[in-house]
Length: 151
Image 1 (spheres, one colour):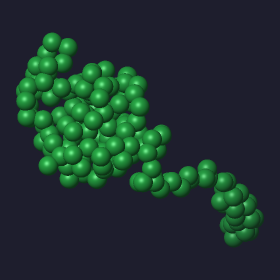
Image 2 (cartoon, one colour):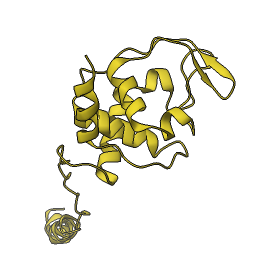
Image 3 (cartoon, helix red, strand yellow):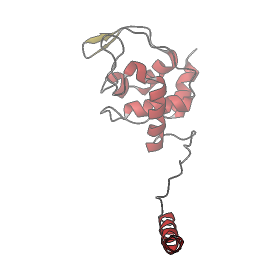
Image 4 (cartoon, one colour):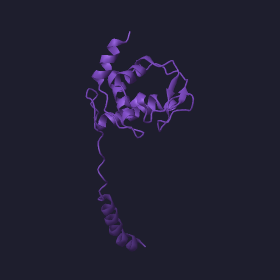
């Protein structure tokens, strides 16, 4: 029995060594997002994460909102139109009925002014370029300018 074990041992060690040499695919290191820069894919990725954290409960994962309560973000003039108005809604909130495509939405939206300008820019850039929307991104400088006008 001992001879058998001694004969098989080198084979087992060789098999273990061979399996240890199998290369695992290299893991990509996360690239830190530049918080001070504007548009681009990185901004939209950051915006998606923030949207999931702050917006998804009311506006839903697919941006369709909740009927008669929270408005959709899909191809609406509020989202695709004037950036200043859209930024103002996030900074001041919205406490009035909103009519979109003949439907009225009545749930007040609280202010998101506690978010940093770059975070608001990222969220809005994500929304303006998701759910079938195609619009220009929003910069932190644009949010800063609108914030300066709000008292």
